[in-house]
Amino acid sequence: MRHVDSFEIQPPASSPTNGVPRSAWARARRRASRWHRPYIALLLVLDFGAAVLASWISISQFEQARAGFRVTEDNATWFHIVAYLLLPLGWLIFLWGTGSYDRRYLGLGTDEFKRAGRASVAVAAGVSFLAFATKTDLSRKAVATALIGAMVLILLGRYLARLVLHTIRRRVGQAAQRMMLVGTLPETLEVYTAVSRSPAAGLIPIAIHLTDGYAAARGIDTPIPVYAGRDVMSLVREVGADTIAVCGSASTEPGELRRLAWQLEGSGVDLIVAPQLTDIAGPRVHIRPIEGLPLLHVEEPTLSGPALLAKNLLDRLAAGFGLLLLAPLFMVIAVTIRISDPGPVFFRQPRVGHEGRTFRVWKFRTMYVDAEQRLASLVDQNETDGMLFKIKEDPRVFPAGRFLRASSLDELPQLINVLWGEMSLVGPRPLPADDGDFLGDVRRRLLVRPGITGLWQVSGRSDLSWDEAVRLDLYYVDNWSLAYDLAILWRTIGVVLARKGAY
Image (spheres, rainbow, N blue to C red):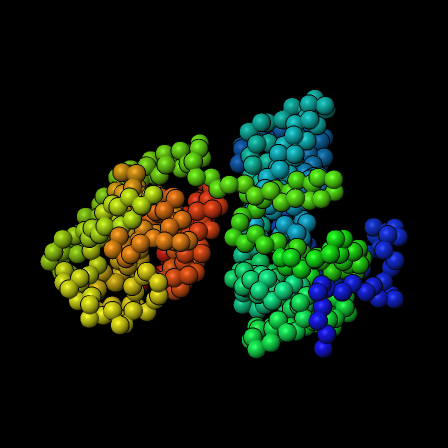
């Protein structure tokens, strides 16, 4: 057993010499992960079908479509060839040109949908240019319906395909890349934990190659096998990996990472670099190369400015509209609570809000009126940790209250707090004011307004540990955006309907 200070790069005899030009068409087949090939084939079929369906809907929708397109008996055949063959093929070409079939963007994130959106703009521009160049008189309504319909159907088809892909990854463990982690033990385990939280990402860590020797892992239980002092490429073949992730400061010598990238050329093995920038979203990270040195520039979180002003405005408009719309439901819930247990309809408790200011949160009462007096006798039954107190079968909750909690209807009166500017629709959950000081990392949650829903709620709610809840809340604080808020609100619908982690 020997100690190594960095990963070793020893090109095998069968590998091509570094620096020698290789044909772009003579790439090696990927070692294990070929999920993207049938998936891309499926997307091609779905996208083509979506474009054909959109053309059919456009032509069928308008009773005067044939007249609008100036179709005669002589050019009817050509018209249908354009509508049902050439235009859908044009969609595929533009989608391919914008990278919508690049496996790096498939299955996760928003890049796939952004690129499909760019393709739709390009198709619209192309159709407009051809119509102008050929002086073709087209029905603008019919063309707009075909183009917009195709874009919507393509995005919908890709979303459904992604749901199927995620289901396969979560339940079957297939359609994923087998990843070997390279670095020190703390760095590799941190990346392992982050990747394991999201099975939908399609990255399965299968081995760790330590750069500081076996001694660093002595007496420590690791979730996957650990190796050290081995040639990286031979170890990749041995464990059957198709991806190498260099974690943190694994590359300690200048040029070492570059030589590893050279060695992997033509091998069918992907190279991923996981820097020590955890819990920072992509939009905040920018690469700024200087003299060939790629520098990662990390932007500050958006905690003020026009985006925050727009968020506050949208919050109050949505809260006001929501209160008017939900008024009849509030009356029904109020009557149900009074019948279940005589007492106040609302429960108001001091909570800590933005920048440490205390406010009283509005909630429908779900517990008996003597719940606070019975709390002391239940402290030893707490099923969570940190600053939270939760019991799945809390005896202080009356039957109707259990339904209100499971369906999250008890949280709806917090729209009043949102209307008054004390809370937001999306943000960290407000914690009780009497649970001690907000010190250390926890205090950073107070930089934004607390929310009715948030990243913690859509990621497991009460099933998560306190540390995990804090990590998710801090991630939201550092990376929030209006688009992210809309995504969380959309995910909240599914979580509420599934009643996941609600008690």
